[in-house]
Image (cartoon, rainbow, N blue to C red; front, side, top):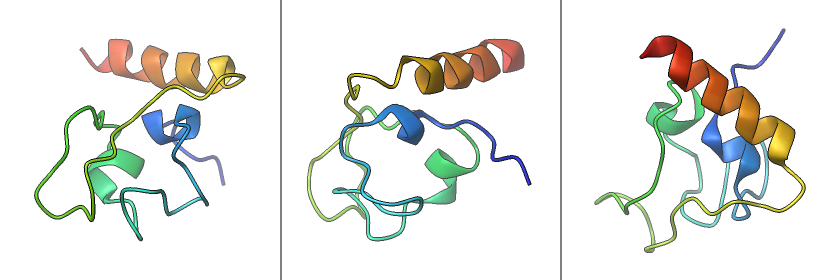
Length: 71
């Protein structure tokens, strides 16, 4: 099964496939639907937001291409 690219794939705060420093379980709006997480949302446990992780350029470009195709 191929995973749809998400901004999470290129985030320095990502811990596992489904968690990060902001969320114990990353909400579907980010991990499934590809929304960018550039501002904190009310139900997260802190104020951590997406930050680029060096070395993840291909993952970021995959997500960016998907976003541009949906525009």
